[in-house]
Amino acid sequence: MLRVMVLVSGGGTNLQAIIDAVEAGSVTNVKLVGVLSNNKTVKSLERARNAGIPAVSLSPKDFADRASFNDALLAKVDEFEPDLIVLAGFLVAIPEAMVHKYSNRIINIHPSLIPSFCGVGYYGLKVHEKALERGVKVTGATVHFVNEGMDEGPIIAQKAVAVEEDDTAEVLQRRVMEQAEWILLPKAIDDIANDRIQVVDGKVLKK
Ligand code: GRF
Image (cartoon, rainbow, N blue to C red; front, side, top):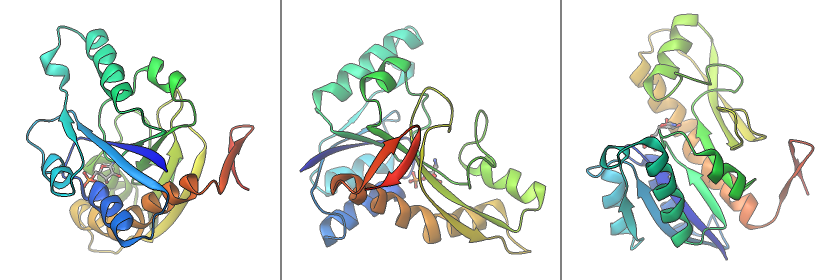
């Protein structure tokens, strides 16, 4: 059983998709061992608790500086002894020490087709606003391993989603979630849990 910990900041619909997939048996060999949010009030913590998953919050605001928050974050994650850390809408930059300690064991979902609309400043609704501003006809989502760069790690899976002419950022965000994110992220976890992929020379290959 792969011990999976999920890190969240927002509503947690991706977290819910993972919980549902594990409960439905479409994701196997996975134990959801914990959920951590950087925000005390989010719906995600409720979703975790409803599913019987231990849920904790840890906010940078409660620490004197970023370095002490980073140390506490790593210590808290370590307590759960995860084999895989899933960033499901986690808006906090992952400390380098954590990236190194959990090398190729942290994955992230990003709501665009990387390398479009990613990197510093591209998070949440902003990603979709920028895609609409640019007038792209196709966008999508990407699941990737996390390395030291921002949205730069090896790509595990991508799925394209059509942009419609009258889309608002909110409408597009929802379509990307429904048609791509909620499918891709559980599938990637299942592939890792069932040992179907490997990282070779910075690229993800099927075994
Ligand atoms: C998703 O669009 C995810 O790709 C992005 O943040 C959003 C989180 O949504 N990184 P939710 O909290 O899973 O509902």
